[in-house]
Image (cartoon, rainbow, N blue to C red; front, side):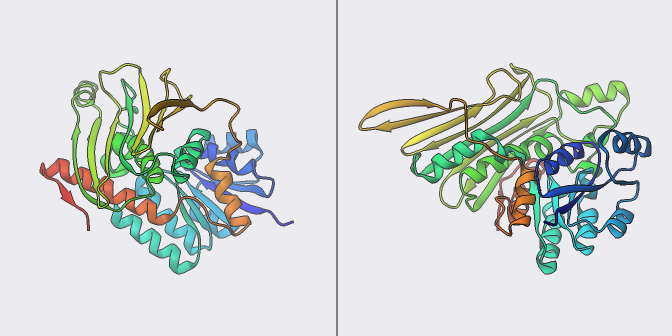
Length: 346
């Protein structure tokens, strides 16, 4: 059986994409591109990558992969996605989808016209806890979900000053667009992506800016962001994201949903990347607590799942449209922070 030929552009987080595609028995990684020639050659030797390129467009022309992962600074998501689509490739783009919603819409429309798949790597959906949460919501265990709070905060978890993460022209923003995007999508997915009505948000740079100034390094994005999103169905979502904040533990991630018949809470109790899931329900006038215990049902990564959807011609849980909606909300939060006023969504 012919295998799906996959390629990856970007060798930072792109290493995870390579591992993910190789988990699928019907996938093969045929090429990797990165601007760092030395790092690329070392990786090729260690991982036995058939071909490597410092020019991603040359890779697309020569190798002609079926599926391409775009894993580069956010500024380059748009041009490289368009290049991959132009060469007939399905695309899995790292989050955030683009620098802003206007770019994301161009990517979405181009993929639709080409008849190709375009998805965003919202990897938080693909944990065992996330699948369990979604199952409970879809089964109606929570009843009507009317409120959610989703956060990702770090005590001191700032990217290196002077790098692309802290440069707005390359990243589009700070922890809101880097970390908050994951928790935002997870909450929206669990809520079945209700239509937003308005957004109010604030961003701050109280801790990182003085440090960057002392080190004489560029850092022109926020280090903390918060927002409230009101939906047309009456539900509300609160969102918080930070690289620097005086909190405990050092890293705090959680998503909480409140419904008329029950609630859900996913969190990392020890400040690491190990999550727990609890559910709270009322039945017959009595309150009950439930906890997800191992072993949990098997789940596959976003990379495996996207490739599998292409191979078997079946739906993938993340759509380009959802990536656009997330970008519209992020844009609105930044706009609200800049103007000091709520932003109405069309």
